[in-house]
Image (cartoon, rainbow, N blue to C red; front, side):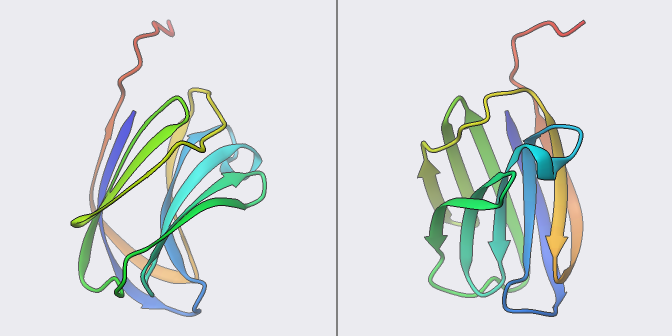
Length: 126
């Protein structure tokens, strides 16, 4: 699958703030999913739920200011992340289930101006 979202941090209330995307989420993202989130101070983290258990962390080398575009592409245990011109890859995904996509923010006001979800599943679920 793939997800692309355009967002901007309007306000943050904590140094631990983030905006992110839960994917492969069940009925509750907190009970089983992956989460990729962006911290305004300049990092991208990948976590597994329940938890969160951070399985990978990447530094942008700068704060996230203005409009950002986050793109995720995932298949099996492989995940490619793009935030602006920064690209990161991990092979540490573990939940291999079909699930939902959920946008979320913690300790931050975020505006999402555009989002696109791409299903590449070849299984007929009907």
